[in-house]
Image (tube, rainbow, N blue to C red):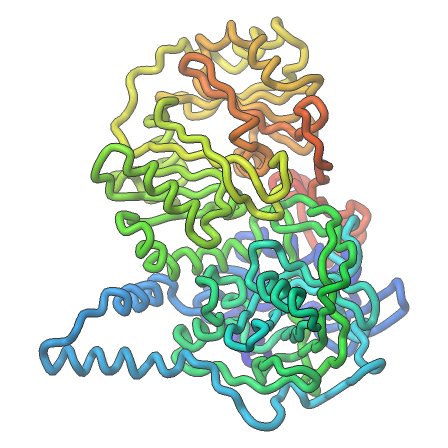
Length: 604
């Protein structure tokens, strides 16, 4: 962490904040605002307190370590170059000439660095050792990020686990709720490696050892969220990218090996027979994930460096730190994805689609149904299987991250006959599916030529709104976008008083003027002039098996919050919002300086 902080300073990527600031809401609110700025930087808080418990910490807190593309390159490297190295290994052929043999030998020799090295003795992470009752989680500046959070959460913990037989190792990054000084919740979602290990221990009736690293090389964090195949230890990726072995030491009270340069290590055991209610937690979807039962760890030791730094992140509505980490992941893992989908050219997961809600993919289309085949391939591969909405274009499409150009390209090619609706696994954090972790999948094949002419009569926003309001006073506002394309978008906000399928039926007289209708709730949460946040809202809120309606050549998407009108039996969560009084206090003290426009733009 000290090296990381010096590197950030050297590259003018660090703000040091010496004001006294609270771990409850204040520090995370500042980090949340900073990372949304175009020139965002990492933040080092040096004067950290817990006002609620009248406590002052001598431990600084570092946040937004991956605050921009430059920081990612400093700590991880150039994603395209790393991806190219992986691709060259995957395509390696038996050498025939001496130069080829030397090149191949060099590549194979370098792979020795992928294996983590186990060191004898103790590491820097064990300069201070606290055991039993002395190992108190309250001694760490663990943040409470959002007003409705169930308590403090460790948000950048490296969770190290091992299979029952010790053959498989895993590093994952999960939120960890503090219940008491010696009890820490494990948010192991049903699809995660650690959860698979957990069930092995549960079946055997044995306690499961767990160690949690905090700090050290920031690269550990990125490795922990990398979508590697099951069974591959994430620290091997560290060795491959860094071209040096991860250096490990054995935990003090269990047999888990951890990086020796972690700033903190929290050790303990999980009793698989015991569970606790975890949450709520304001998550990276921009919504709270609600209370569920999860395992928890009983802390047996907390070790640290003599002068540690506490590393944390903040999640909520986009854009956030995961935007920059996610872009590196896209570039590096493209070659691995191509092994399952060989005709894939590129893919892009916009941060306001919160990654698993929306993916754009460019393919080399070779035959009819090729895009549909690729949809099935995506939905069957690792973490790609969680993707709700997949849009495929041909190799002649614009760059996938050229938002305006690719949107126009797609809208000129959407044809109802080329829409595929399916059902499958969705992320456990998804709130809109009728059932937990099981929901609709939407695939759009936009690989073909432009479709025929509009077949509708375009009206002005004012004229179309008036026609809609003549039919029903539920419609409160209206905007049209991309009217230069074959499938213009019509967005309406409504006071929802019934299932929106009935509203769509009533609006059928307007279908001569509408190609794609998108419905959202009329509230101060939705601004029809803010397409960035509307995309976030709609892809979060729709389930393709329930919320898509078709009539003739018109498509309707119901992006409203779901309730009893929709026969929705689950609880709908609240948005993750900043606490106004905290923002006001920080603004008065001169610690933040944000306009009303900024608040509105990012729906703070």
